[in-house]
Length: 116
Image 1 (cartoon, rainbow, N blue to C red):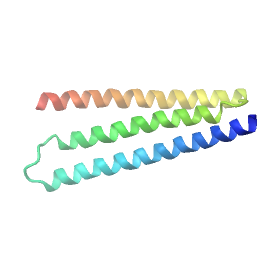
Image 2 (image 1 turned 30 degrees about the vertical axis):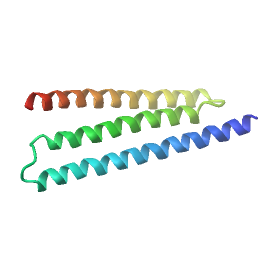
Image 3 (image 1 turned 180 degrees about the vertical axis):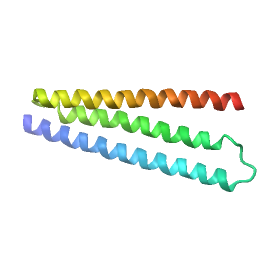
Image 4 (image 1 turned 90 degrees about the vertical axis):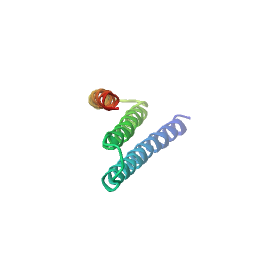
């Protein structure tokens, strides 16, 4: 039974990592599309680049959350103290990155609202 659970958790972790990669790729394409459209369009609003930056920021934030979940799943069954320490460090780094990313997105969103 434990082997089946381990396989399910490994597949789920891999699926979360794949989802994170897809989210980043889609966010990147959307942000680039907005950036290109802003630079080509003569009548576009000036804050279009901010919209692209926010799209990419949301994608990166979601990807970080998915990767944290994948790391937790990978080390959930019979972890050693070394693995738990590494997991703690990875989760801490990704959480701090996500916090500052969201903080920056709030600031950019406020600036965009002030310009409107």
